[in-house]
Image 1 (cartoon, one colour):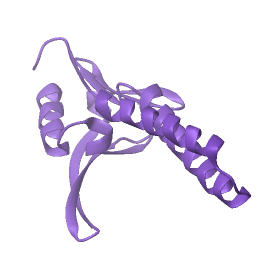
Image 2 (tube, helix red, strand yellow):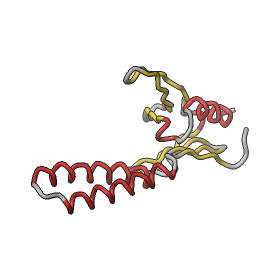
Image 3 (cartoon, helix red, strand yellow):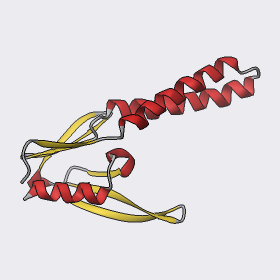
Image 4 (cartoon, one colour):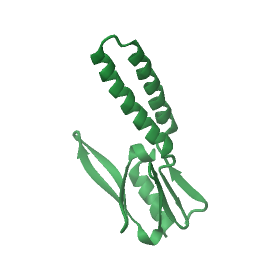
Length: 134
């Protein structure tokens, strides 16, 4: 069993890029001439701001220590002891390519995290979590 704790989150550079794109889209919104342009760009600003805020607020997305696993979301943190959680990696076909997701299953919830949420390969994270469970 590893010592201390381990955390996974969306890469900081990606979160920063989201905020830069949000600011650029907001500047574009102020420069837009027509109502149609303002509406389209306004929706874009809103979507980018929501995605960036989610990635910022939910850091770290997943953490593990000797006692269990913690998942952070917009509603706060949820924690489960190792005895109450099952760790699996699922493979799916999306847009013509295979992607993986990490599933944390307990009696209370099913949490699905992707590479974007974790900043790492879900298979590698699952192996690290299984090391913590031992």
